[in-house]
Length: 66
Image (cartoon, rainbow, N blue to C red; front, side, top):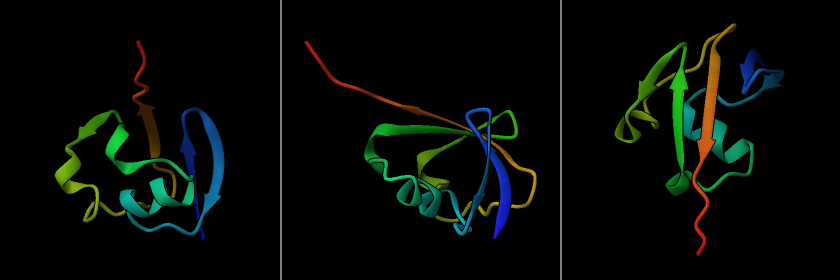
């Protein structure tokens, strides 16, 4: 289990990649942008970007509307 911070909240997660984290949080991977330790991670790298203890993750979820 990893101890990370997601959107300013301390969390213990089992996910080891950004894609797995998005799934663990129940978010739609097509509608998120992720920053890891103050650097934006391109969506194409989410499946291969590994999480480590102490990472600071910011996730923005896009919401459509009219």
